[in-house]
Image: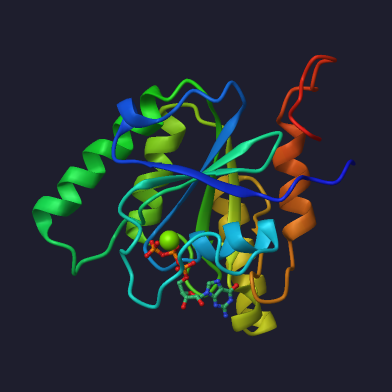
Length: 200
Ligand SMILES: Nc1nc2c(ncn2[C@@H]2O[C@H](COP(=O)(O)OP(=O)(O)OP(=O)(O)O)[C@@H](O)[C@H]2O)c(=O)[nH]1
Ligand SMILES: [Mg+2]
């Protein structure tokens, strides 16, 4: 496959109505706070500081758009962060569900779960919502560098059993899973036509 152009930050949106029209497929990165969404995005882009990462969960409070050429990635606020006020949690829950239900450009969702403890109650709630709205899902286990092999195998098996699909194993530290995920994301994009100047 042709080399991707360097990924770029485009804009932030506080709600659905502020999301721009790109005319290209978009994938949302979804997962609980601190699961490694922004780090995964940086690993895909091979750029350390493209998306802000943080040891303090709940920092991404906007839909942040990144242009990867043939597709866009939307880095979303994490769910399940108890230290954010109830009112703020409720606000985000509403905005996120509106975005996920009504965003026409949304080609799919990359659902991240922590390889150490996947399928938390919040993960299951999010998954049920995504399935209910018939969004194509790519299930990813994050931080696989940080888990013992036996534990990883148990996590993979439990996710496979519950979802009927093998999760993609990813580490933003080692780059494991990067090529596989990129090719899934690119595979979902339509072929560029002759007049396209998307740069791919
Ligand atoms: N060991 C290991 N740590 C990781 C990996 N990915 C992310 N982390 C660490 O996990 C923490 C959270 O990473 P982020 O990428 O900011 O997580 P996030 O899901 O974007 O968090 P919010 O935006 O707050 O929801 C940081 O301290 C990262 O360094 C990984 O693949 N391996
Ligand atoms: Mg983040």
